[in-house]
Length: 247
Image (cartoon, rainbow, N blue to C red; front, side, top):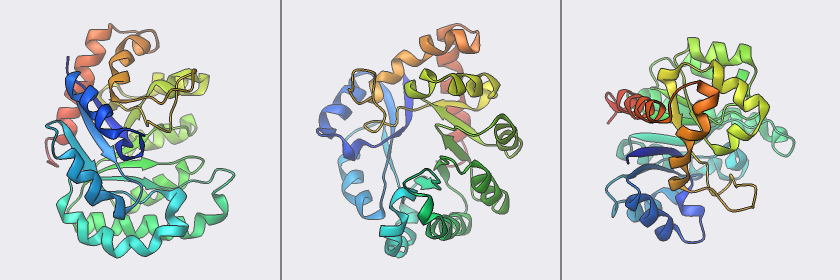
């Protein structure tokens, strides 16, 4: 039963191969996002042995102040990828003091992606939705933007919708009241699935993995007021529409 996980940190699991083996057995398409350019080559080599895995080139905002010197490597690798991420901004308590360097890094990445003709981007926006949307507005040709685990306001959500953004949602987002309210307001044709494992964990402390996306249609059924099979098929169609231009 085909399904997708468009935001998963495969290289950060204790046993990445086992996670990918289970995903392949379940027929899941996985986007393996990276947090630094230096992590991309090794992660990509591992992913190439699987038919449904692609590796995304990232520079995580929480690492921007430490790894901004990898931007030249990011630029050199950009022509080898279809996806960019995890990128973005983070103004949460432990990272807001680095927002200036985060912003510089994010702007440079957006400029590179725009000049490369556009890529599918998966974007982190914790406590920084306004700034993310401001930047996306400046680069309309940078490609489709997926706001992963979006947690902004309803007004910011509406602005993101107006900008043509996509939204990847996972099991952890469904656990919060705010997450469920945001999901209800998202256009059904712009919804995608993710896990954000191994960072996102279940209530028992076990990291989510790609096969956990199999549970999402059932979990979303009452929120979206639709049948699980319909939700699954709609999300797969959304994925096909998203990738039709940028693969």
